[in-house]
Image 1 (tube, rainbow over the protein chains, first blue to last red):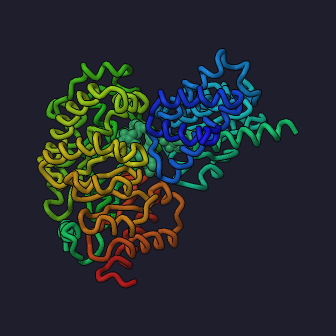
Image 2: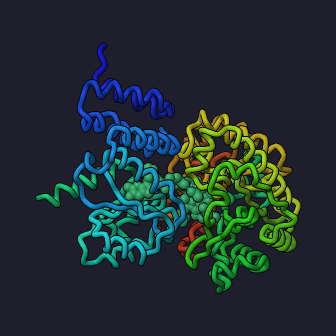
Length: 214
Length: 342
Ligand code: B12
Protein backbone atom coordinates (compact mmCIF):
# COMPACT_ATOMS: atom_id res chain seq x y z
CA UNK A 1 0.00 0.00 0.00
CA UNK A 2 1.36 3.41 -0.98
CA UNK A 3 1.99 5.72 1.93
CA UNK A 4 -0.40 8.63 2.41
CA UNK A 5 -0.18 11.42 4.96
CA UNK A 6 -2.72 9.47 7.02
CA UNK A 7 -0.69 6.26 7.16
CA UNK A 8 2.49 8.22 7.79
CA UNK A 9 0.75 9.99 10.68
CA UNK A 10 0.03 6.65 12.35
CA UNK A 11 3.67 5.60 11.99
CA UNK A 12 4.78 9.00 13.18
CA UNK A 13 2.74 8.76 16.38
CA UNK A 14 4.21 5.33 17.04
CA UNK A 15 7.73 6.68 16.49
CA UNK A 16 7.02 9.53 18.92
CA UNK A 17 5.80 7.18 21.64
CA UNK A 18 8.95 5.10 21.19
CA UNK A 19 10.96 8.34 21.25
CA UNK A 20 12.50 7.33 17.94
CA UNK A 21 13.66 10.70 16.67
CA UNK A 22 15.43 9.27 13.64
CA UNK A 23 12.32 7.48 12.41
CA UNK A 24 10.21 10.58 13.08
CA UNK A 25 12.61 12.71 11.05
CA UNK A 26 12.55 10.32 8.11
CA UNK A 27 8.73 10.11 8.18
CA UNK A 28 8.54 13.91 7.99
CA UNK A 29 10.89 13.85 5.01
CA UNK A 30 8.65 11.30 3.28
CA UNK A 31 5.55 13.34 4.08
CA UNK A 32 7.10 16.44 2.55
CA UNK A 33 7.09 14.63 -0.81
CA UNK A 34 3.31 14.18 -0.46
CA UNK A 35 2.07 17.54 0.81
CA UNK A 36 2.84 21.17 1.63
CA UNK A 37 4.45 22.34 4.86
CA UNK A 38 1.25 23.45 6.59
CA UNK A 39 -0.51 20.24 5.63
CA UNK A 40 2.36 18.11 6.93
CA UNK A 41 2.47 20.05 10.18
CA UNK A 42 -1.27 19.65 10.64
CA UNK A 43 -1.49 15.96 9.85
CA UNK A 44 1.82 14.61 11.08
CA UNK A 45 2.52 16.83 14.03
CA UNK A 46 -0.58 18.57 15.37
CA UNK A 47 -2.92 15.60 15.06
CA UNK A 48 -0.62 12.95 16.57
CA UNK A 49 0.40 15.32 19.40
CA UNK A 50 -3.27 16.03 20.09
CA UNK A 51 -3.98 12.34 20.14
CA UNK A 52 -1.09 11.65 22.50
CA UNK A 53 -2.29 14.45 24.81
CA UNK A 54 -5.78 13.00 24.88
CA UNK A 55 -4.44 9.54 25.60
CA UNK A 56 -2.54 10.95 28.58
CA UNK A 57 -5.76 12.32 30.00
CA UNK A 58 -7.39 8.94 29.49
CA UNK A 59 -4.49 7.24 31.25
CA UNK A 60 -3.04 5.17 28.39
CA UNK A 61 0.09 7.27 27.76
CA UNK A 62 2.52 8.57 30.37
CA UNK A 63 3.50 12.18 30.87
CA UNK A 64 7.14 11.48 30.02
CA UNK A 65 5.99 10.40 26.55
CA UNK A 66 3.91 13.57 26.14
CA UNK A 67 6.92 15.65 27.10
CA UNK A 68 9.50 13.82 25.00
CA UNK A 69 7.28 13.71 21.91
CA UNK A 70 6.63 17.46 22.23
CA UNK A 71 10.36 18.04 22.40
CA UNK A 72 11.04 15.90 19.32
CA UNK A 73 8.34 17.73 17.34
CA UNK A 74 9.57 21.11 18.49
CA UNK A 75 13.00 20.26 17.03
CA UNK A 76 11.48 18.99 13.77
CA UNK A 77 9.31 22.06 13.34
CA UNK A 78 12.28 24.36 13.83
CA UNK A 79 13.86 22.59 10.84
CA UNK A 80 10.64 22.77 8.80
CA UNK A 81 9.98 26.41 9.58
CA UNK A 82 13.41 28.00 9.73
CA UNK A 83 13.78 31.65 10.72
CA UNK A 84 10.55 31.10 12.65
CA UNK A 85 7.95 33.80 12.76
CA UNK A 86 7.41 34.65 9.09
CA UNK A 87 6.15 31.24 8.11
CA UNK A 88 4.42 30.61 11.41
CA UNK A 89 0.68 31.19 11.45
CA UNK A 90 -0.77 34.66 11.81
CA UNK A 91 -2.19 34.62 15.29
CA UNK A 92 -3.20 36.49 18.41
CA UNK A 93 -0.46 37.71 20.79
CA UNK A 94 0.07 34.94 23.29
CA UNK A 95 2.11 34.19 26.38
CA UNK A 96 2.46 31.42 28.94
CA UNK A 97 3.63 31.51 32.57
CA UNK A 98 3.74 29.45 35.74
CA UNK A 99 2.05 31.48 38.46
CA UNK A 100 3.91 31.48 41.82
CA UNK A 101 5.14 27.90 41.56
CA UNK A 102 8.55 26.84 40.38
CA UNK A 103 7.34 23.74 38.51
CA UNK A 104 7.97 24.44 34.88
CA UNK A 105 7.25 21.09 33.22
CA UNK A 106 3.54 21.58 32.49
CA UNK A 107 4.28 24.96 30.94
CA UNK A 108 7.18 23.51 28.98
CA UNK A 109 4.92 20.80 27.51
CA UNK A 110 2.26 23.26 26.39
CA UNK A 111 4.86 25.71 25.08
CA UNK A 112 6.71 23.01 23.08
CA UNK A 113 3.50 21.56 21.67
CA UNK A 114 2.14 24.93 20.56
CA UNK A 115 5.45 25.83 18.95
CA UNK A 116 5.52 22.36 17.39
CA UNK A 117 2.14 23.23 15.90
CA UNK A 118 3.68 26.20 14.14
CA UNK A 119 2.54 28.86 16.63
CA UNK A 120 4.66 31.46 18.35
CA UNK A 121 4.19 32.51 21.96
CA UNK A 122 6.17 34.25 24.66
CA UNK A 123 7.45 32.44 27.70
CA UNK A 124 7.06 34.59 30.81
CA UNK A 125 8.85 31.97 32.93
CA UNK A 126 8.00 30.34 36.26
CA UNK A 127 7.64 31.60 39.82
CA UNK A 128 5.95 34.70 38.36
CA UNK A 129 3.98 36.74 40.92
CA UNK A 130 0.47 38.05 40.33
CA UNK A 131 1.71 41.63 39.92
CA UNK A 132 4.51 40.67 37.55
CA UNK A 133 2.13 38.65 35.43
CA UNK A 134 -0.47 41.39 35.22
CA UNK A 135 2.12 44.04 34.37
CA UNK A 136 3.82 42.03 31.64
CA UNK A 137 0.52 40.93 30.12
CA UNK A 138 -0.69 44.51 29.89
CA UNK A 139 2.66 45.89 28.72
CA UNK A 140 2.86 43.35 25.91
CA UNK A 141 -0.85 43.67 25.00
CA UNK A 142 -1.31 39.90 25.25
CA UNK A 143 -4.55 38.56 23.77
CA UNK A 144 -4.36 35.06 25.21
CA UNK A 145 -2.58 34.26 28.45
CA UNK A 146 -1.93 30.65 29.42
CA UNK A 147 -1.42 30.11 33.14
CA UNK A 148 -0.02 26.88 34.56
CA UNK A 149 0.08 25.99 38.27
CA UNK A 150 0.87 22.95 40.36
CA UNK A 151 -0.11 24.00 43.88
CA UNK A 152 -3.70 24.67 44.95
CA UNK A 153 -3.00 28.07 46.57
CA UNK A 154 -1.38 29.17 43.30
CA UNK A 155 -4.52 28.18 41.45
CA UNK A 156 -6.50 30.43 43.81
CA UNK A 157 -4.21 33.36 42.85
CA UNK A 158 -5.56 33.27 39.30
CA UNK A 159 -8.50 35.25 40.62
CA UNK A 160 -6.20 38.16 41.47
CA UNK A 161 -4.64 37.95 38.00
CA UNK A 162 -8.07 38.22 36.42
CA UNK A 163 -8.89 41.18 38.64
CA UNK A 164 -5.66 42.88 37.64
CA UNK A 165 -6.49 42.32 33.98
CA UNK A 166 -10.01 43.72 34.39
CA UNK A 167 -10.81 46.12 31.57
CA UNK A 168 -8.34 44.51 29.17
CA UNK A 169 -9.42 42.09 26.47
CA UNK A 170 -6.91 39.41 27.56
CA UNK A 171 -8.44 35.95 27.78
CA UNK A 172 -6.98 33.61 30.40
CA UNK A 173 -6.81 29.85 30.00
CA UNK A 174 -5.62 27.89 33.04
CA UNK A 175 -4.23 24.38 33.44
CA UNK A 176 -2.36 22.10 35.86
CA UNK A 177 -3.07 19.45 38.48
CA UNK A 178 -5.41 21.35 40.86
CA UNK A 179 -7.70 22.27 37.96
CA UNK A 180 -7.75 18.66 36.81
CA UNK A 181 -8.62 17.37 40.26
CA UNK A 182 -11.22 20.08 40.97
CA UNK A 183 -13.38 20.41 37.87
CA UNK A 184 -15.12 23.65 39.00
CA UNK A 185 -12.01 25.42 40.18
CA UNK A 186 -11.34 27.31 36.94
CA UNK A 187 -14.76 28.97 37.17
CA UNK A 188 -14.30 29.75 40.86
CA UNK A 189 -11.14 31.71 40.04
CA UNK A 190 -12.82 33.51 37.11
CA UNK A 191 -10.65 32.01 34.37
CA UNK A 192 -12.06 32.15 30.84
CA UNK A 193 -11.22 28.52 30.15
CA UNK A 194 -9.47 25.45 31.47
CA UNK A 195 -7.32 23.09 29.42
CA UNK A 196 -5.97 19.62 30.02
CA UNK A 197 -3.43 19.61 27.21
CA UNK A 198 -2.08 21.47 24.21
CA UNK A 199 -5.04 20.37 22.08
CA UNK A 200 -7.37 22.29 24.40
CA UNK A 201 -5.06 25.28 24.13
CA UNK A 202 -5.17 25.04 20.32
CA UNK A 203 -8.98 24.89 20.34
CA UNK A 204 -9.07 27.94 22.55
CA UNK A 205 -6.71 29.83 20.24
CA UNK A 206 -8.80 28.90 17.20
CA UNK A 207 -12.02 29.90 18.87
CA UNK A 208 -10.56 33.18 20.02
CA UNK A 209 -9.02 33.92 16.63
CA UNK A 210 -12.37 33.38 14.91
CA UNK A 211 -14.18 35.56 17.44
CA UNK A 212 -11.60 38.29 17.00
CA UNK A 213 -11.96 38.31 13.24
CA UNK A 214 -15.77 38.31 13.20
CA UNK B 1 -9.30 -2.36 69.67
CA UNK B 2 -6.54 0.24 69.69
CA UNK B 3 -5.78 2.04 66.44
CA UNK B 4 -2.65 -0.05 66.01
CA UNK B 5 -4.53 -3.33 66.50
CA UNK B 6 -7.16 -2.18 64.02
CA UNK B 7 -4.53 -1.34 61.43
CA UNK B 8 -2.52 -4.53 61.93
CA UNK B 9 -5.68 -6.61 61.63
CA UNK B 10 -6.64 -5.01 58.36
CA UNK B 11 -3.09 -5.33 57.01
CA UNK B 12 -3.38 -9.04 57.77
CA UNK B 13 -6.42 -9.03 55.43
CA UNK B 14 -8.82 -9.68 58.26
CA UNK B 15 -11.74 -7.55 59.37
CA UNK B 16 -11.11 -5.46 62.54
CA UNK B 17 -13.87 -3.77 64.57
CA UNK B 18 -14.16 -0.99 61.99
CA UNK B 19 -12.33 0.41 58.99
CA UNK B 20 -9.21 2.30 60.10
CA UNK B 21 -9.05 5.90 58.91
CA UNK B 22 -5.86 7.93 58.38
CA UNK B 23 -6.28 11.70 58.20
CA UNK B 24 -2.93 12.55 56.64
CA UNK B 25 -2.75 16.08 57.99
CA UNK B 26 0.48 18.05 57.82
CA UNK B 27 -0.55 21.71 58.19
CA UNK B 28 -3.77 21.64 60.23
CA UNK B 29 -1.70 21.42 63.41
CA UNK B 30 -0.39 24.92 62.70
CA UNK B 31 -3.96 26.20 62.47
CA UNK B 32 -4.89 24.45 65.72
CA UNK B 33 -1.88 25.93 67.53
CA UNK B 34 -2.42 29.39 66.03
CA UNK B 35 0.99 29.39 64.29
CA UNK B 36 2.11 30.22 60.79
CA UNK B 37 3.13 27.20 58.75
CA UNK B 38 6.75 28.33 58.87
CA UNK B 39 6.73 28.76 62.67
CA UNK B 40 5.01 25.43 63.07
CA UNK B 41 7.66 23.51 61.16
CA UNK B 42 10.53 25.36 62.86
CA UNK B 43 10.08 23.47 66.11
CA UNK B 44 9.68 19.67 66.47
CA UNK B 45 7.65 20.18 69.64
CA UNK B 46 5.03 22.12 67.69
CA UNK B 47 4.58 19.35 65.15
CA UNK B 48 4.38 16.70 67.87
CA UNK B 49 1.83 18.78 69.79
CA UNK B 50 -0.14 19.51 66.59
CA UNK B 51 -0.31 15.82 65.70
CA UNK B 52 -1.41 14.80 69.20
CA UNK B 53 -4.08 17.50 69.35
CA UNK B 54 -5.48 16.41 65.99
CA UNK B 55 -5.49 12.80 67.11
CA UNK B 56 -7.64 13.81 70.08
CA UNK B 57 -9.82 16.16 68.09
CA UNK B 58 -10.64 13.91 65.14
CA UNK B 59 -10.19 10.45 66.69
CA UNK B 60 -8.60 8.95 63.59
CA UNK B 61 -6.05 6.14 63.55
CA UNK B 62 -2.54 7.46 62.96
CA UNK B 63 0.09 10.02 63.75
CA UNK B 64 1.78 11.43 60.65
CA UNK B 65 5.28 12.79 61.14
CA UNK B 66 5.65 14.05 57.56
CA UNK B 67 6.76 17.71 57.41
CA UNK B 68 7.00 18.41 53.63
CA UNK B 69 8.75 16.80 50.66
CA UNK B 70 11.33 19.54 50.24
CA UNK B 71 12.78 18.82 53.69
CA UNK B 72 14.88 16.16 51.96
CA UNK B 73 16.38 18.50 49.39
CA UNK B 74 16.86 20.94 52.26
CA UNK B 75 19.09 18.27 53.83
CA UNK B 76 21.00 18.09 50.53
CA UNK B 77 21.60 21.86 50.70
CA UNK B 78 18.53 23.15 48.86
CA UNK B 79 16.27 26.07 49.66
CA UNK B 80 12.69 25.84 50.97
CA UNK B 81 10.02 28.38 50.09
CA UNK B 82 7.27 28.84 52.67
CA UNK B 83 3.83 30.26 52.14
CA UNK B 84 1.02 31.02 54.56
CA UNK B 85 -1.73 29.01 52.92
CA UNK B 86 -0.10 25.82 51.69
CA UNK B 87 2.80 23.39 51.96
CA UNK B 88 6.39 24.61 51.66
CA UNK B 89 7.97 23.93 48.27
CA UNK B 90 11.50 23.29 47.09
CA UNK B 91 13.30 26.31 45.68
CA UNK B 92 15.57 26.12 42.63
CA UNK B 93 16.95 22.64 41.90
CA UNK B 94 20.23 21.69 43.62
CA UNK B 95 22.03 21.42 40.30
CA UNK B 96 21.23 23.12 37.01
CA UNK B 97 23.46 20.96 34.83
CA UNK B 98 22.99 17.20 34.84
CA UNK B 99 26.75 16.59 34.96
CA UNK B 100 26.54 18.01 38.51
CA UNK B 101 25.14 14.61 39.53
CA UNK B 102 28.72 13.35 39.72
CA UNK B 103 29.60 15.75 42.50
CA UNK B 104 26.43 15.38 44.59
CA UNK B 105 27.15 13.97 48.04
CA UNK B 106 24.32 12.48 50.10
CA UNK B 107 23.90 14.15 53.50
CA UNK B 108 24.31 12.10 56.68
CA UNK B 109 21.03 11.94 58.56
CA UNK B 110 22.68 12.38 61.95
CA UNK B 111 24.32 15.62 60.80
CA UNK B 112 21.22 17.26 59.39
CA UNK B 113 19.38 19.79 61.52
CA UNK B 114 16.16 19.68 59.45
CA UNK B 115 15.94 15.87 59.49
CA UNK B 116 16.69 15.90 63.21
CA UNK B 117 13.48 17.88 63.72
CA UNK B 118 11.42 15.09 62.15
CA UNK B 119 13.19 12.46 64.27
CA UNK B 120 12.63 14.52 67.40
CA UNK B 121 8.90 14.88 66.58
CA UNK B 122 8.76 11.12 66.09
CA UNK B 123 10.38 10.46 69.48
CA UNK B 124 8.04 12.89 71.23
CA UNK B 125 4.85 11.43 69.78
CA UNK B 126 6.11 7.90 70.43
CA UNK B 127 6.53 8.74 74.12
CA UNK B 128 2.90 9.85 74.20
CA UNK B 129 1.14 7.20 72.12
CA UNK B 130 3.37 4.19 72.79
CA UNK B 131 2.01 1.19 70.95
CA UNK B 132 -1.59 2.35 70.74
CA UNK B 133 -1.44 4.37 67.52
CA UNK B 134 0.71 3.74 64.44
CA UNK B 135 3.22 6.48 63.65
CA UNK B 136 3.67 6.94 59.93
CA UNK B 137 7.01 8.32 58.73
CA UNK B 138 7.71 9.43 55.16
CA UNK B 139 10.52 9.24 52.63
CA UNK B 140 10.68 10.37 49.02
CA UNK B 141 11.75 7.47 46.86
CA UNK B 142 15.27 7.66 45.39
CA UNK B 143 13.54 7.64 42.00
CA UNK B 144 11.17 10.58 42.70
CA UNK B 145 13.51 12.83 44.70
CA UNK B 146 15.44 13.95 41.56
CA UNK B 147 12.51 16.10 40.40
CA UNK B 148 13.49 18.45 43.21
CA UNK B 149 17.23 17.80 42.86
CA UNK B 150 17.48 18.51 39.11
CA UNK B 151 14.09 19.85 37.98
CA UNK B 152 11.63 17.65 36.10
CA UNK B 153 12.84 18.40 32.56
CA UNK B 154 16.46 17.63 33.28
CA UNK B 155 15.46 14.52 35.15
CA UNK B 156 13.45 13.15 32.22
CA UNK B 157 16.47 13.78 30.00
CA UNK B 158 18.64 11.84 32.47
CA UNK B 159 16.17 8.93 32.63
CA UNK B 160 15.98 8.65 28.85
CA UNK B 161 19.39 9.75 27.65
CA UNK B 162 22.04 9.41 30.37
CA UNK B 163 21.97 5.91 31.90
CA UNK B 164 25.34 6.33 33.64
CA UNK B 165 24.30 9.52 35.37
CA UNK B 166 20.96 7.92 36.22
CA UNK B 167 22.66 4.96 37.90
CA UNK B 168 25.05 7.21 39.76
CA UNK B 169 22.18 9.33 41.06
CA UNK B 170 20.09 6.31 42.11
CA UNK B 171 23.05 4.83 44.00
CA UNK B 172 23.44 8.06 46.00
CA UNK B 173 19.72 8.52 46.60
CA UNK B 174 19.26 4.92 47.69
CA UNK B 175 21.95 5.25 50.35
CA UNK B 176 20.27 8.38 51.64
CA UNK B 177 16.71 7.04 51.50
CA UNK B 178 17.55 3.83 53.37
CA UNK B 179 19.41 5.67 56.11
CA UNK B 180 16.58 8.22 56.43
CA UNK B 181 13.84 5.59 56.60
CA UNK B 182 15.69 3.48 59.15
CA UNK B 183 16.43 6.51 61.33
CA UNK B 184 12.69 7.26 61.48
CA UNK B 185 11.89 3.66 62.36
CA UNK B 186 14.50 3.75 65.07
CA UNK B 187 13.02 6.99 66.46
CA UNK B 188 9.66 5.25 66.85
CA UNK B 189 7.91 5.25 63.46
CA UNK B 190 5.76 2.15 62.96
CA UNK B 191 5.87 2.18 59.17
CA UNK B 192 7.30 4.25 56.33
CA UNK B 193 5.30 5.73 53.50
CA UNK B 194 7.47 5.59 50.37
CA UNK B 195 6.36 8.42 48.08
CA UNK B 196 7.13 7.45 44.52
CA UNK B 197 4.84 9.35 42.13
CA UNK B 198 7.38 9.44 39.29
CA UNK B 199 6.89 5.65 39.08
CA UNK B 200 3.18 6.17 38.47
CA UNK B 201 1.99 5.25 34.96
CA UNK B 202 0.62 8.82 34.90
CA UNK B 203 4.25 9.93 34.70
CA UNK B 204 6.28 7.10 33.10
CA UNK B 205 5.12 4.13 31.02
CA UNK B 206 5.11 0.77 32.81
CA UNK B 207 7.85 -0.80 30.66
CA UNK B 208 10.17 2.02 31.65
CA UNK B 209 9.05 1.60 35.28
CA UNK B 210 10.32 -1.96 35.10
CA UNK B 211 13.90 -0.92 34.37
CA UNK B 212 13.88 2.16 36.62
CA UNK B 213 11.49 2.89 39.53
CA UNK B 214 10.66 -0.77 40.07
CA UNK B 215 14.29 -1.89 40.41
CA UNK B 216 15.07 1.07 42.64
CA UNK B 217 12.06 0.32 44.87
CA UNK B 218 12.86 -3.38 45.09
CA UNK B 219 16.44 -2.68 46.18
CA UNK B 220 15.50 0.12 48.57
CA UNK B 221 12.49 -1.42 50.30
CA UNK B 222 14.48 -4.60 50.96
CA UNK B 223 16.83 -2.59 53.15
CA UNK B 224 14.24 -0.60 55.06
CA UNK B 225 13.84 -2.36 58.39
CA UNK B 226 10.09 -2.03 58.80
CA UNK B 227 6.83 -2.20 56.88
CA UNK B 228 6.36 0.20 53.97
CA UNK B 229 3.45 1.67 52.04
CA UNK B 230 4.02 2.90 48.48
CA UNK B 231 2.23 6.07 47.48
CA UNK B 232 1.94 7.55 43.98
CA UNK B 233 0.64 10.85 45.43
CA UNK B 234 -2.60 10.68 43.41
CA UNK B 235 -0.97 9.42 40.22
CA UNK B 236 -2.59 6.32 38.72
CA UNK B 237 -1.34 2.79 39.55
CA UNK B 238 -3.29 0.19 37.58
CA UNK B 239 -1.10 -0.25 34.46
CA UNK B 240 1.98 -0.87 36.66
CA UNK B 241 0.32 -2.64 39.55
CA UNK B 242 1.59 -6.15 38.79
CA UNK B 243 5.18 -5.00 39.08
CA UNK B 244 4.47 -2.77 42.02
CA UNK B 245 3.05 -5.70 43.96
CA UNK B 246 6.46 -7.37 43.66
CA UNK B 247 8.52 -4.52 45.15
CA UNK B 248 8.08 -5.72 48.72
CA UNK B 249 5.66 -3.01 49.79
CA UNK B 250 2.69 -3.92 51.98
CA UNK B 251 0.27 -1.12 51.15
CA UNK B 252 -0.62 0.91 48.07
CA UNK B 253 -1.88 4.52 48.10
CA UNK B 254 -4.58 4.76 45.44
CA UNK B 255 -5.56 7.74 43.28
CA UNK B 256 -9.08 9.19 43.17
CA UNK B 257 -8.81 8.74 39.39
CA UNK B 258 -9.02 4.97 39.80
CA UNK B 259 -11.81 2.74 41.00
CA UNK B 260 -11.14 1.25 44.45
CA UNK B 261 -13.17 -1.84 43.61
CA UNK B 262 -11.08 -2.51 40.52
CA UNK B 263 -7.79 -1.98 42.36
CA UNK B 264 -8.98 -4.32 45.12
CA UNK B 265 -9.90 -6.99 42.56
CA UNK B 266 -6.59 -6.73 40.74
CA UNK B 267 -4.53 -6.82 43.94
CA UNK B 268 -6.53 -9.76 45.18
CA UNK B 269 -5.17 -9.68 48.72
CA UNK B 270 -1.52 -9.19 47.75
CA UNK B 271 -1.33 -5.63 49.11
CA UNK B 272 -3.58 -3.54 51.33
CA UNK B 273 -5.17 -0.37 50.01
CA UNK B 274 -4.85 3.16 51.35
CA UNK B 275 -7.14 5.75 49.80
CA UNK B 276 -8.72 7.28 47.87
CA UNK B 277 -10.82 10.32 48.82
CA UNK B 278 -9.96 13.30 46.61
CA UNK B 279 -8.15 15.65 49.03
CA UNK B 280 -8.58 18.67 46.80
CA UNK B 281 -12.24 17.77 46.31
CA UNK B 282 -12.71 17.87 50.11
CA UNK B 283 -12.20 21.63 50.05
CA UNK B 284 -15.69 22.04 48.55
CA UNK B 285 -17.51 18.99 49.85
CA UNK B 286 -20.71 19.43 51.83
CA UNK B 287 -21.29 17.15 54.80
CA UNK B 288 -23.74 15.10 52.74
CA UNK B 289 -21.21 14.68 49.91
CA UNK B 290 -18.51 13.74 52.39
CA UNK B 291 -20.67 11.02 53.90
CA UNK B 292 -21.52 9.67 50.47
CA UNK B 293 -17.88 9.54 49.34
CA UNK B 294 -16.86 7.71 52.51
CA UNK B 295 -19.75 5.28 52.20
CA UNK B 296 -18.90 4.54 48.59
CA UNK B 297 -15.18 3.94 49.27
CA UNK B 298 -15.97 1.62 52.18
CA UNK B 299 -18.54 -0.35 50.17
CA UNK B 300 -15.96 -0.94 47.45
CA UNK B 301 -12.81 -1.69 49.39
CA UNK B 302 -13.53 -2.56 53.02
CA UNK B 303 -15.06 -6.08 52.87
CA UNK B 304 -12.49 -8.67 53.95
CA UNK B 305 -10.11 -6.06 55.39
CA UNK B 306 -6.93 -4.93 53.65
CA UNK B 307 -8.22 -1.37 53.57
CA UNK B 308 -7.41 1.90 55.30
CA UNK B 309 -9.55 4.88 54.36
CA UNK B 310 -7.56 8.03 53.61
CA UNK B 311 -7.13 10.75 51.00
CA UNK B 312 -5.70 10.11 47.53
CA UNK B 313 -2.51 12.15 47.90
CA UNK B 314 -1.01 11.54 51.31
CA UNK B 315 -1.65 15.09 52.45
CA UNK B 316 -4.93 16.89 53.06
CA UNK B 317 -4.89 20.51 51.83
CA UNK B 318 -4.73 23.28 54.44
CA UNK B 319 -8.05 24.67 53.14
CA UNK B 320 -10.08 21.58 54.10
CA UNK B 321 -12.37 22.48 57.01
CA UNK B 322 -12.40 20.73 60.37
CA UNK B 323 -16.12 19.93 59.93
CA UNK B 324 -15.30 17.94 56.81
CA UNK B 325 -12.56 16.02 58.63
CA UNK B 326 -14.92 15.32 61.53
CA UNK B 327 -17.56 14.14 59.07
CA UNK B 328 -15.09 11.73 57.47
CA UNK B 329 -14.30 10.06 60.79
CA UNK B 330 -17.96 10.04 61.85
CA UNK B 331 -19.00 8.46 58.56
CA UNK B 332 -16.35 5.77 58.95
CA UNK B 333 -17.90 4.89 62.30
CA UNK B 334 -21.37 4.86 60.73
CA UNK B 335 -20.63 2.93 57.54
CA UNK B 336 -17.35 1.19 58.33
CA UNK B 337 -18.22 -0.94 61.32
CA UNK B 338 -17.66 -4.60 60.45
CA UNK B 339 -19.37 -6.57 59.10
CA UNK B 340 -20.06 -4.02 56.36
CA UNK B 341 -23.76 -3.97 55.42
CA UNK B 342 -24.50 -2.86 51.88
C1 B12 C 1 5.00 13.86 40.69
C2 B12 C 1 4.42 14.64 41.83
C3 B12 C 1 5.30 15.05 42.84
C4 B12 C 1 6.80 14.82 42.76
C5 B12 C 1 7.41 15.86 41.82
C6 B12 C 1 6.63 17.16 41.83
C7 B12 C 1 7.24 18.36 41.15
N1 B12 C 1 6.94 18.60 39.91
O1 B12 C 1 8.00 19.06 41.75
C8 B12 C 1 7.24 15.03 44.24
C9 B12 C 1 7.30 13.73 44.98
C10 B12 C 1 8.56 15.73 44.44
C11 B12 C 1 6.05 15.86 44.75
C12 B12 C 1 6.12 16.63 45.87
C13 B12 C 1 5.13 17.51 46.26
N2 B12 C 1 3.86 17.57 45.82
CO1 B12 C 1 3.27 16.54 44.31
N3 B12 C 1 2.51 15.62 42.88
C14 B12 C 1 3.03 14.94 41.90
C15 B12 C 1 1.94 14.51 40.89
C16 B12 C 1 1.65 13.02 41.05
C17 B12 C 1 2.29 14.87 39.46
C18 B12 C 1 2.78 16.31 39.33
C19 B12 C 1 3.58 16.59 38.11
O2 B12 C 1 4.69 17.10 38.19
N4 B12 C 1 3.04 16.27 36.96
C20 B12 C 1 3.66 16.57 35.70
C21 B12 C 1 3.16 17.91 35.17
C22 B12 C 1 3.82 18.24 33.88
O3 B12 C 1 1.77 17.77 34.97
P1 B12 C 1 0.81 19.00 35.00
O4 B12 C 1 1.47 20.15 35.66
O5 B12 C 1 -0.51 18.57 35.47
O6 B12 C 1 0.72 19.39 33.43
C23 B12 C 1 -0.07 18.67 32.51
C24 B12 C 1 -1.48 19.24 32.36
O7 B12 C 1 -2.04 19.64 33.60
C25 B12 C 1 -1.29 20.35 31.37
N5 B12 C 1 -1.10 21.71 31.85
C26 B12 C 1 -0.30 22.20 32.82
N6 B12 C 1 -0.35 23.52 32.84
C27 B12 C 1 -1.19 23.91 31.86
C28 B12 C 1 -1.59 25.18 31.44
C29 B12 C 1 -2.49 25.28 30.37
C30 B12 C 1 -2.92 26.62 29.92
C31 B12 C 1 -2.99 24.11 29.72
C32 B12 C 1 -3.93 24.21 28.61
C33 B12 C 1 -2.59 22.85 30.16
C34 B12 C 1 -1.67 22.77 31.21
O8 B12 C 1 -0.13 20.02 30.63
C35 B12 C 1 0.54 18.89 31.15
C36 B12 C 1 0.37 17.69 30.24
O9 B12 C 1 -0.26 17.94 29.07
C37 B12 C 1 0.72 15.40 41.34
C38 B12 C 1 -0.66 14.74 41.28
C39 B12 C 1 -1.27 14.73 39.93
N7 B12 C 1 -2.19 13.82 39.76
O10 B12 C 1 -1.00 15.52 39.05
C40 B12 C 1 1.07 15.77 42.79
C41 B12 C 1 0.72 17.18 43.26
C42 B12 C 1 1.12 18.17 42.21
N8 B12 C 1 1.57 17.39 44.42
C43 B12 C 1 1.04 18.15 45.32
C44 B12 C 1 1.72 18.60 46.48
C45 B12 C 1 0.91 19.35 47.50
C46 B12 C 1 3.10 18.34 46.66
C47 B12 C 1 3.97 18.82 47.83
C48 B12 C 1 3.79 20.27 48.21
C49 B12 C 1 3.72 17.90 49.04
C50 B12 C 1 4.41 18.40 50.29
N9 B12 C 1 3.66 18.74 51.32
O11 B12 C 1 5.60 18.48 50.33
C51 B12 C 1 5.40 18.54 47.29
C52 B12 C 1 6.06 19.76 46.63
C53 B12 C 1 7.30 19.39 45.88
C54 B12 C 1 8.18 20.54 45.56
N10 B12 C 1 8.59 20.65 44.32
O12 B12 C 1 8.51 21.29 46.43
C55 B12 C 1 -0.42 18.47 45.00
C56 B12 C 1 -0.64 19.94 44.62
C57 B12 C 1 -2.05 20.44 44.87
C58 B12 C 1 -2.25 20.84 46.30
N11 B12 C 1 -2.78 19.97 47.13
O13 B12 C 1 -1.92 21.95 46.66
C59 B12 C 1 -0.74 17.45 43.83
C60 B12 C 1 -1.68 17.94 42.75
C61 B12 C 1 -1.30 16.19 44.49
C62 B12 C 1 -2.75 16.31 44.95
N12 B12 C 1 -3.63 15.47 44.45
O14 B12 C 1 -3.09 17.15 45.75
N13 B12 C 1 4.97 15.74 43.95
